[in-house]
Image 1 (cartoon, rainbow, N blue to C red):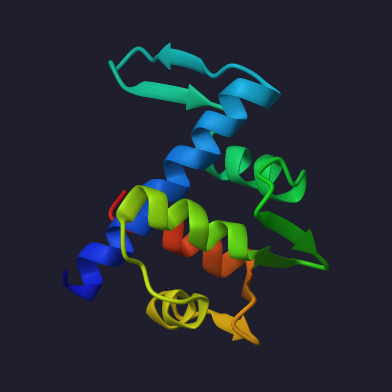
Image 2: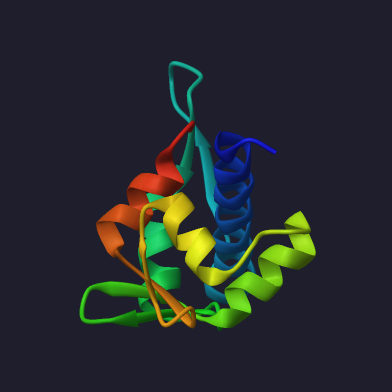
Length: 120
């Protein structure tokens, strides 16, 4: 599998996890069709990400001083969804994030948001 395909699978996985967590545990989404026929979802994606990440609603995503930390459970969940995903350091390298002692992946909130917005 090419790196770009693997990045997209990880991105899709995280977007799905964040959206499902938001709807199941925080609040339902409101869908509005404006006068031009555009579909508007409220709250917007950025707000959903912020509330899920900063609220630590997903057990393997922690929030500390503006940093997002992915625990080893993230790799386990990815392995179930994507099959072979490599080690934590491989995932971090693929995403351009930092890996500490092959135990956790650390990134800034801005970097996570930028990654989640790719191909949207």
